[in-house]
Image (cartoon, rainbow, N blue to C red):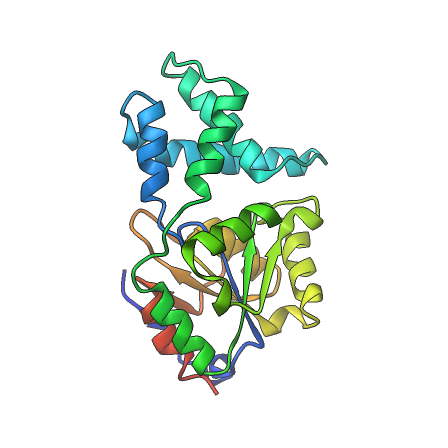
Length: 237
């Protein structure tokens, strides 16, 4: 996918806050792929199915007016995918596997350099995740990313997961700014689409296997890694 940015001058104005999705956008899920694959009889290729099942049931939970910790939904999704492979995993085992693997993810190679460039350019950086507040804190401490961010936001306070519009509205209010002053940076088409429909700006990081949603509004920045997106953002006025 080609790195792009629209040529509209108004879009060169800096967003007041850059909100970052965490898993896959900043953190490399390779460790999870190996752990989940090991549990699923060596089927590392089932990671995408597990992840999409987790997302599907996070939406089912929110749409039904319920809330469960994202990690617990991930564990339940792991049990479901395993069952389809005739593998039985207990709830306790699944939760332990997800907590340990998701809590110790390394950042993608270019992430720290890119975040440093944004901070040097004067941007305000906020993590914005479906993961729990405690889970996010653990992930950032493990990955060495805490120092780069001005805020760590988990949607658990809203009782709904991204991409519900309410979560983006809450994120903007939490930072005391208007939706159009926010920019989401994410490697998931569903997250970028949700942000755009909520009135935010967005940058899509096209990590391997990820695509933007064709029916969503056009994304302002599309880049193959975070550093390339940052090279565009630092030119904004």
